[in-house]
Amino acid sequence: MINKLNIIGGVIQNKEIGSTPLKTQIIMPSGNHNVRTQIALDPETALGITNHNTGNTSPSASANRHATWLQNVENADQTYVGAHFFVDETAIIQVLPINEVAYHAGDGKGDGNMKTIAIEICENGNMLKAEENAKCLNAALLLTYPHFKIYKHQDWSGKYCPRVILGRNSWNEFVEDILKYVQDSNTEASNAEVSPIEAWKIKGIHFAIEEGLITDYAYWLDRIDEEMPAWAHFIILEKALEKMRQEMMLLVDEKLEAYREEA
Image (cartoon, rainbow, N blue to C red):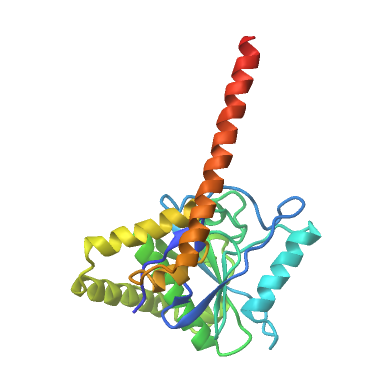
């Protein structure tokens, strides 16, 4: 079953989508932000997902290699290009937060670049398996943002991409399979009851992550109904107290500054 995504700061926290491993290798900003544009993209108002093929058939051109390549592009500070995900036959790798614009659609400041999330499907191995993984990723994003639509690169700039899917004349089938995944997941979810207390617990984990009290979302989600060990109590208490100290110091500094200005 494909589930809605848990996303914090634009980064997916899930370790798998379906049965495919999801890895995070977020590009570190450098120079003129050729890849890391630092331009906000609000998923709640975004149009949807744009699907691509990488155009690289080298046997070594995996999702991991493309993630490394994209970091090198950012470091080189010469070419403006980007994507949010690379997908191959074995894994899905997120390389940009989904709440940040990527230059991928070839339409400049148009809606393709500015209002869609980019998925690049690798061409180095089992293409059908890579496409299946991409379908699952599309479906998970649609479950999370039901207003999303599914696009191909060709829709924005006319480029013949995703070239492998278009070359087989199977784009409509690709979209239909994604929508079927969404429908099946919604049906399964409607048959499963989630108690309010479970939703409350998950909300608590999100709060603790956002406040910096814990860092490993998957670890705590897996142990959501277990008794928390003593060491975890102490660490979280330490972090909470440190956060309070920092906030108190900021408040004191603000009061002192206001006092100096009045004096």
